[in-house]
Image (tube, rainbow, N blue to C red; front, side, top):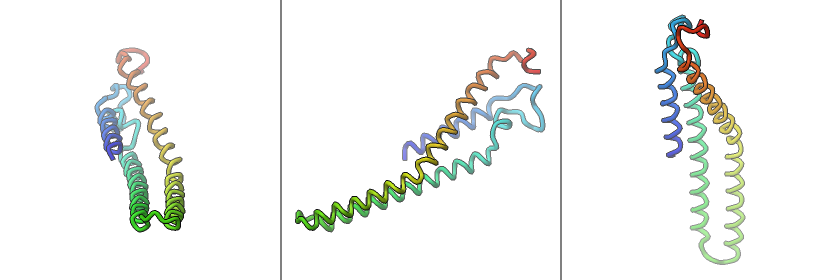
Length: 142
């Protein structure tokens, strides 16, 4: 859960940074005055963030459910008899298989999203570096 908060904070900080940098007057148009106006549609980014958050919460609830089932089964079959041991092992394997399946369904999506965001952030930082080093009176701006 802490990682989710850190990611959310990084997202908000990134958007705040994009809103902070005003673009050169030569490229301002149609009310687009800041990097944020050119690079992202904030409403779409917020939709994407919310979708990621819902997927993560769904996955977390499935994991919690499986953990509760495992704990419940362990409590019911806590004796050391061979039959209960075999049942517990079989049920545990089944639960872990189901959990693994649930995680593997979402993993490629999560990895893809994180990779895209990371690449976009690197590009933003690169562009900010370029914007910060350009002399507003130079030919590059025109």
